[in-house]
Structure formats: C-alpha cells, structure tokens
Length: 324
Image 1 (cartoon, rainbow, N blue to C red):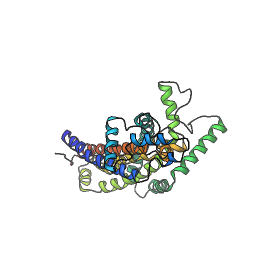
Image 2: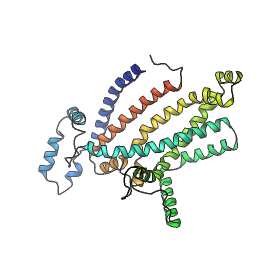
Image 3: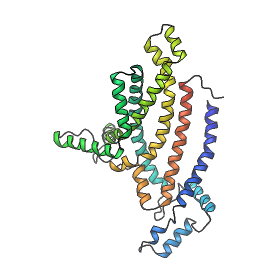
Image 4: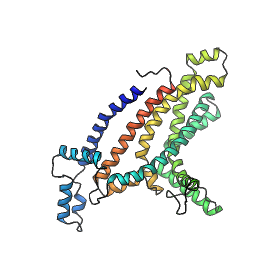
C-alpha cells in the first residue's frame, strides 16, 4: 500500500505541472494584467513600469511562467499587482473557512445519502423508494442560489417571529463568539444553513449512486451464496453487499470534495462567508491575475489529493483490489 501511495504521489507531480502551465496560459490569454490599472488615473506611469518589471510582463510567455512557478514554490505565490502582502497569507486565511463548510456539508450528505440509498435499494419500489427518488430529482434540479435565499428567509422569519436564534444567516462568527466549546457551537450555527444548501445536491447524488450500486450488488452471485449459507439478511447486507456498493460513492464523493472546495463560490458569497469563493470573485472582478492563478492552483492540488484518497479507500473497502 505504501508503494502504491508513493507511486501515485509521483504520478501527481507531472499532473500538477501540466495543470499549472494550463492555468498560467489560460489566464494570461485573457488579456493584459495591467489593463485595468492603466485606466485608473491615480496609478502613475512609473508605478505601471515598476509592476511590469517586477512581474516580468515584457518577457516571453514561457519565461514569465518560469518566474511564476518560482514565486509559487519559494515565495508563497508572490504578491498581487498593487499589494506587497504575499498571496498565500490571504489563501491561508480563507482555505480553512471553506474546508470547514465543505467538510460539514459533505459529512451530512454522505451519511444521509448512503442511508437513504441503502434503504431504498432494500425496499425497492416501496413508497419510501418512490418518495426519495422524487425528492432526489428535485434536489438535482434546484438552483443553489434559490435554495440559499429561501433558507435565509425561512430562518430569518423564525428568528423574528418566535425570537429564537437557531442558525445565523450570514457571517462566520458572532462578535461575542468567545472561545473553546462556545466558539465551536457558534461556528456551527453560522455554517449550518450554507452547509444545508451545499448538501442537498450532494445528498441527492449520493443516494442515487448508492441505490444503484446496492441493487447491483445484492443480486450478485456471492450475495446469493451468503444467503444460501443461512446468514441473516442484516449480515448479508452490511458485511457482503454494503462495502462493495460503497466504491462508486467513494469515487463521486472524493471528486466532489475537490470540486466543492472551488465550487462553493455562490453559497459563500450569498452567506457572506470569508472563504475561497468571495476571495476568487473579488480578485476576478478586480482583474488581478496572480491571486486568481494561485486560487486555481490550490483547487487543482486539492482535486488531485482527493483522487489519491479515493484510490487508497478502494483497497480498504474491496479485498479484491490489490495494489502491487
């Protein structure tokens, strides 16, 4: 297993190098990074010249790429165009906030998605199966921004009507959040509604994949052989069918983790969370290419990392998989 992990880590290096080159070329092709600054009368010609020299904007594309990689590796992704603060300092602040949101949302979605999928497969064509199938299709079709706004309105009305604060509808923490257990509870109250928003689509997805995988597994020969041995249905389902049926869900959830870290832009913006989403949007709107490229590189790294985690989990779930 250790050899497999090391091999996959080595394979990840050229993937990340290729991703970094594509990111740099794509963002550079969008136009002159200084175009917005040139339209600002408060920015002098000397300032523009200094920025151009510092960022090597007069050099050929490949040389600029080399300088950018050097900054990313040795100098915390360098600095934005107008600010001397390293880009990594801002990323280091917002990444944990997004990870907290995504981990909470995905934990909820995976748990209930798997639970619903397994029970739907066991009770195929039952009222529960038809109901959850309908709700999952609604979850797929529901726009994230609409659900976020509806949940905000719902819990705001609850707070105003009954004077009960269950969950907060914006921000990451209260001004008097305190520390320790009180801080954790306060953070969960702030992240609960954004996590629900993200979890709805993921839960619909996981429940459908889990139901399909369970239906395929419980009709396989080795499961029928286990039943023929006289094992209880619960033992057959959990020991022989459940673990193998988890494999497709592991694949989807691992990919989802990486995607959601970069894809929670709308949710974080609606709820005013200081996460990777607003950070990306703010720099995109200001047309500062260097924080945008750093953000894209972090997201690409996380996607690769969660793919590796998925491969490792495969071996734990299915004894038929062997990594030599």
